[in-house]
Length: 581
Image (tube, rainbow, N blue to C red; front, top):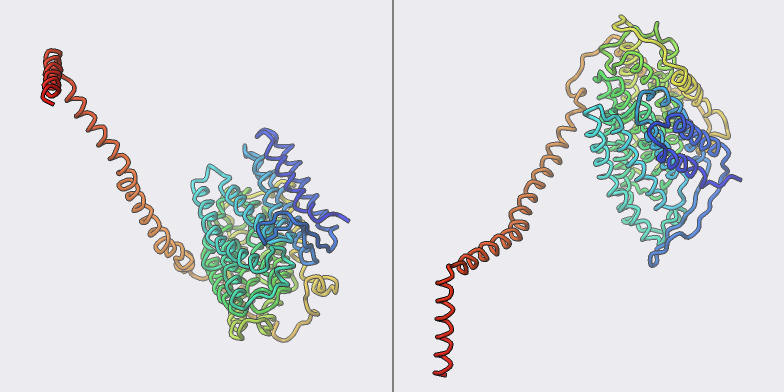
């Protein structure tokens, strides 16, 4: 049996080796990166259900264990991570062919993969937290990779800060659970009998971290700006790592979430579904369209969790990993061919790029929920779960998620049709060409799970693995299909761009006004207080001592005759005092 700890250890070793390579060692870096991702995928496929742990650190009455907890959902998510990571590593060889910093890039992708896999298999909350935080560091490095883009450093800092804001709550939530149970071992934490208040507080704190990592309202604004990173990085972040981590962690710890926490999650999910979808309808940059679609689709997963269906959330996580990786890598092929991200400069590329066109069309169909593609089955599962909620959240949460999910179907079809038409159909505004084989083949291969993975719902072993009920189709399926058709018609005919959608309801500006400006104002005040108060007192004391010394020195500086007279007078005075006394 293969030890589960090898799953994150192999790409971590590849990252260490890659970071030691010189900048000129492109072939070696590519070999190490691809080999590490391929080995991780093979291990994920061969993993058996297992749980092991041993004491690592003891702090008073608290114990931190080192071990893994692998069940069937964990193995499936690990396979998805491995597939996407391998596709990204292969694709990047050509996409970054002229990048002088390719070796550290490949190593950072390996480290990113290792961190996500550590989150997937961790048997202890502290180990999970380590993987969680390493992903944040890697996202910062990879988003800022292209130093020629002026917006890249700002986007990286924004992603780092917003996710750190959520991570403060996540860390506190883990602390509440670990201290309450006396251990951070996940199995023991799940088995511990907490009070309802403790669980509510811990759940809300954990959801803050989920909102940051998984780009949910109100901590979602970093994700579209993260498009400043290389396109393969976008595929990795949006498809199988980072944004999926928050959803996966909630499924892992789901029994700990109370009705109050799930109600908050449901409201957050409903807002995010609509916010992301509406923002996607008004973007010209194809990567930003896909980024906002990720925000919306992660909202679907969060909504499934809120209404009590971890199986539906995991199913959509897996299908989303396939079609979103496909879409980003196909978008990279288009950008590589026409040297632009903007749809307004594209059109008619179907004739020049037939493989990319059909791959992109399948990916968008899966995203929109077109039957019988993968996204149709997983999204239908979420809509059905929201219509028949069975979780601890109040009943109104199910209605809220159901209505948002249905509206999201129509809006998703609208922007998906608009994206396909604006990029590949209509009048040709530029000429393109098919991408080289190492870029084209990962895209073509990802069309297979994007098209067929949804049919796994009819495979009993798969349903059992993630806890899905027996597949069935009822009359309600006609409603989302009708909404999809209506949205596609509107997208094809074209709708005016709404400024509020294009600016994502000005939430960036709101955050800047309510958070950034007050923090900067407070920072300026603290700086002035430090300079005028603390530094002023220290430097003022020094200046006063210098001035006093200068005055004393000037009093001692005099001519020799006058000094001799003063010494003689002092001596006579002392002698007289001695005689008198």
